[in-house]
Structure formats: structure tokens, C-alpha cells
Amino acid sequence: MREWLIEAPPFAPDQARGGRQQGHGEHPLDRYLKEGRIPHIWCPGCGNGIVVTALVKALQKAGLDNETTAVVSGIGCAGRAAGYLALDTYHTTHGRAVPFATGLKLANPKLNVVVVSGDGDLFAIGGNHLIHAARRNIDLTVICINNFNYGMTGGQGGPTTPIDAISTTTPYGCAEHPFNLTALAKAAGATYVARWTALHTYELRDSIAEAMGKRGFGFIEVISPCPTAHARRNKLGAGLDLMRHYRDSAHLSNEADPGEQPISLSGEFAVGKFVDVEKPTFLDQYEQTVVTRSRSGEKRKRETPGPGGSEKRGR
Image (cartoon, rainbow, N blue to C red; front, side, top):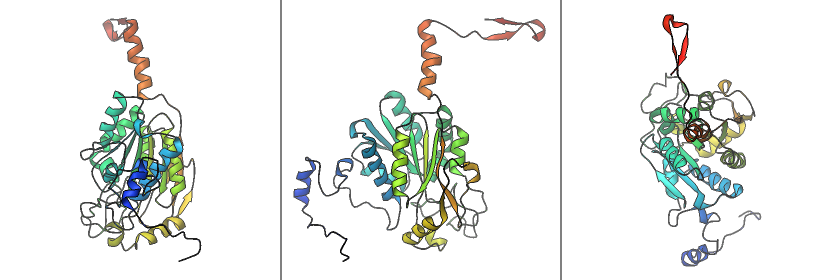
């Protein structure tokens, strides 16, 4: 063992559980984690655990507590994240994480609501919900773990599978153009858009904390290894090989146009914060447009064409 590594003391489960009440236990972030759920079920080399760690460290950095934060996830490998967190968490049906989170936020605007799910859940069956939540500027933080395939169900091709990539449903190579997730989120109206990888742990933590502290629809894409399915079939190596690829191929490009930053099966790609703008949230706009007018008894007059179509009169 190298000298700079610290050898941990023997594990004592009973003592650790007792220490939990004092804020320390078998894991340094135990107050955010459900007891008895660690170790997780994700494959060796998968980046999902890294993203969950970045999320709880972002909660810690932002000073957010367990009582005011809710995490919603959909179906898929990334959707399992909700089951590990000692918060109000909801593991919803396929593609419905965003509308469920929207309902939570509208019912209790004081909640900090975070969605954690995968590229298939959010942009295939859930794509319609996501673009309209961004259009409305619902005050949510959406973290999309993009591993380029449906990993949990066998490695089928999905909305982000790169051209020429092999999957169980594209055995000769994918012939469909993939979504550029950050470009789509920006075009739909997101006020905060960023992309990182599972290697960029500190940047990801800080980005999640920043997005949670900003009002409006925040979207963070996390490029993550899937060594069991996508990487194996495309001969990209193990999880560590993919981390080396991220190190060598990702270049920081803050404020870049995400429409010009696609991702291919191999080659360089951009990471960073691409969008950070201010815009009234849905609740802001609803308060101004509907609530204020309804309280004052004001109704917006609807103008209709008069005879001949040129004259207008109010109703």
C-alpha cells in the first residue's frame, strides 16, 4: 500500500449505526443516504454512483437540507438513484419524472426539486415532457446521465446513440442522427445548460449546486460510462479506459453554442456551462398574468374583427 493511502479501521456496523445520530457513520455522506442501501447495484465502472455523490455533495455545498429537497427519477439504470437517497424521493413511471417533479414544485414552490434520470427516459418516452417544462421555465434542476444506450434492458439504441454505434437493436451500426441534448435544452428554453462527464467530479458538483441555486429550468448533461453494454459492444474498453478518453478528449468551452458541440462515438467534445440567463419562471409569469388579474377582477379584452375585417371592437 502506498504511504499516502490511509488504512481504514475495521468496519463495525452496530457502532456505525449508533454514530449516525451524531452525524457520522459508515459513509461520510450518510445523512443523505438511506441506511442499508450501500453498496449500490450498478455495474463496475458505471458512472451513476459518481453522479449521485456529486449530487449529495452539491446539496452539502449549497447548504440545502433533507427536509426541503425532493429527488425524482424515472425508469432505467439512472432511475435507481432515488432509492439511495435519504430525502423525499420518487421513482416514477417511464418518462414521467419531469411532469411528476413539475407537480411537486407547483404544489410546494418552496421545495428544491431535482430530477435524476437517463437519456432514454428523459429524451425518448419523456422527451415531450422535458421540452415543455423547459419552455414553461419550471423551476427544476434536471440531471441527465447520458450513457448512449438503454443499459438496463440490454443495451438497445436510444435517442443519443451515436452514428455507427453498435447496440442490440443496431447490430450493423446506428443509422439515426442522435439528439444533441444541450442544444435541445437550450432551444426549448432552459435558462441554465451545462455538460460534464463522470470524470469532472468537482465541476459537476459545483454546476449542480449552481443550478439548484438559480431560479428556472436548469439542465445538466453528464456523459457517463456504460462498460457492460455500450462500451463492450463498441470496443471502447472498461470504465477506466473511458475515463481516460474523457480526460484526453473533453475540452472546456464555457458559453459555447451547444448547437455546435455534438458528441460522436469517438473524438473530442466540449464540456462546460453553455447557458446561464435570466427569465421569469412559470410561477412568476402565472402570478403576474393570472393571479394578479383575477384578484383585481381585470379581464383582458379580446379583440375581434369588425365588418369588413378592418375594424376591431372589444368584447
